Length: 44
Image (tube, rainbow, N blue to C red; front, side):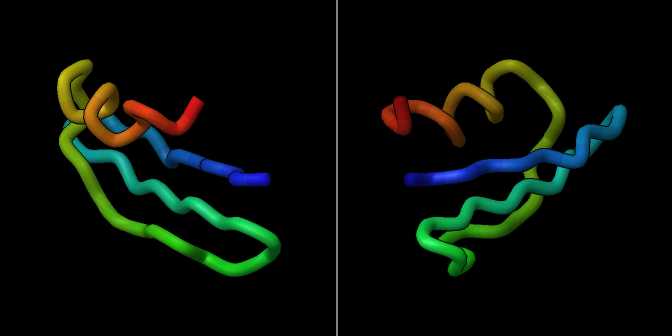
């Protein structure tokens, strides 16, 4: 199972994704609808 978490702030947000206890993706994006949709597109 894939787990995702976000630390949301006004301008930028940090995210982390893990699978089976290991981090598979981590980074920082702008906090807007376009960036968030692109990050999570296709995961569900």
